[in-house]
Image (spheres, rainbow, N blue to C red):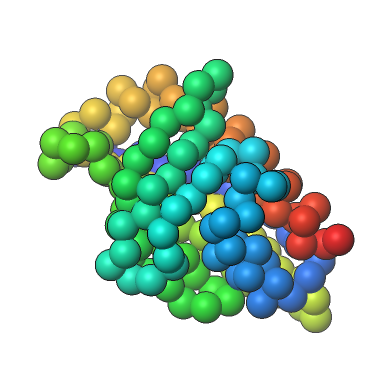
Length: 144
């Protein structure tokens, strides 16, 4: 089974708490986030979220399940296609303090399942661009 992953990161000059607060304030995503256009639900383990992502020219909606919530550090969810085993995406956001008022924000995803390789060829580049655009927008909002 092919495992594919995406890894992006950016340095943000602010506190881990501030980045975390922006990242988990889902209601405000439409104001600033160019990639995750909306996110409904609560950042609680086991919670199902409703995420609307920009996907090339269109949008796609999926219902990931929250796996990890470690305040000011890690937020992870698992999204999948309705048919088990075809395509899963485990998405993580990590906030690493690297200095006073400086953090490394890491956004990545590990894809698995029968269709992972094919889907990554189709959407991989767009997805990386989406992660990078969100990272940049988060940086700009957090450093204000």
